[in-house]
Length: 354
Image 1 (cartoon, rainbow, N blue to C red):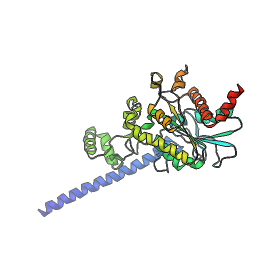
Image 2: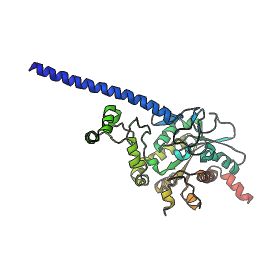
Image 3: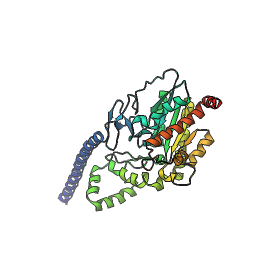
Image 4: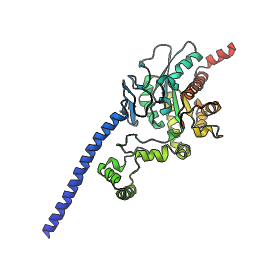
């Protein structure tokens, strides 16, 4: 009897030891794969050192990451665009742009995206002032990350105005784009983050995955991979345009950004970009809830829906990203709004001249 128990214990110990060693080996392989992936995926980004922000640009880096059609150059402050001094020179009006892939515009040269176009547009409207734009955007960012970045980094640059570029899918909190770091839609760590061995077994044996997913889901684990989340939610028009369910928590981020800017004496303006689906609809506002909030709080809000719709030629390169013409139109509309809201005397001077 004792021998049987001893053999059973040794068998169990051997099995557990074998599983542990297999897990360690898989973790080691995953770690190397993740490092290789990051180097190959992007020579200009790294996991952010700011809690609550997933990725950031590497200061002083440059390169053409896969999927990018343009060479990207990052300044020493860690933003796309020309070099900028931390301290503002006299007579300089500094604008910080927070946004996602629309403002980052990886498919265009930096000077052809609306943040890069704004200085010249504003100089033409407000003579005698020097304008400087900090493009603090990055593809894949959501509003939550942008507000954290605003509080932890951007406001320290003493902007006179913060422009928050908003797209309809910004209400969806995005998973990390690194497939070796499997987080769920809202950032919670999935079972895969704990077991690389299970991840491999899932991919090799579909029946095991079916059982494994069902069991882990019942235990409260988020079993979706980032690719599955993006396919199910972020790229699905039903989720992109269904703002109402996420509006209460999304709303708080705009209120927080507005309050942070007020506390630091900076202006705040929201620029909303529509989707191709909305251009072909009869809807009058891209995000009616946001437009109402802006009116309620007295926040200048530029909705590009009507200007884009009025443009007869195409202004989008895909479902939401403006092409070169669309970026130029956006820069004109946003510059007009900045002039009207923050330099009213220049508007009056132009009107009197006519």
